[in-house]
Image 1 (tube, rainbow, N blue to C red):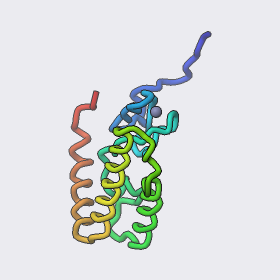
Image 2 (cartoon, helix red, strand yellow; image 1 turned 180 degrees about the vertical axis):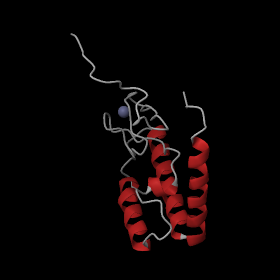
Image 3 (tube, rainbow, N blue to C red; image 1 turned 120 degrees about the vertical axis):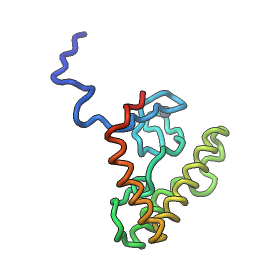
Image 4 (cartoon, helix red, strand yellow; image 1 turned 30 degrees about the vertical axis):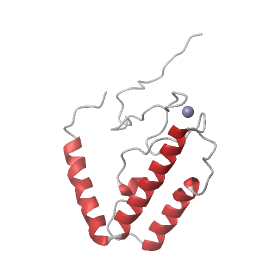
Length: 136
Ligand SMILES: [Zn+2]
């Protein structure tokens, strides 16, 4: 089998700053915001995301509290109840860690002072990240 690459796949302008970690269950590639592995359905541990990204919201100060709540309940529903009761211990731990991370993002974004602080941290971070070495 021959494969002809029409363009470079590494180092392009679309390369994410944080390469996604592989799935702990099947080793498949997962997106940085994925809650579950699309290949095997495993619950992934929460990625180190800012609260805006975690809840799929724009990074802005004047967020609608109703929209924050709607986004949160949409994500949190995936971890509600006993739906992971038959998974192994690591999966259940990941599910509770995801739920806790979502609740933390909700708490941060619904408090205007904490939301403003999170936004300031992000603005400072993105400037610093430009000089940071790539994560292996
Ligand atoms: Zn997987």
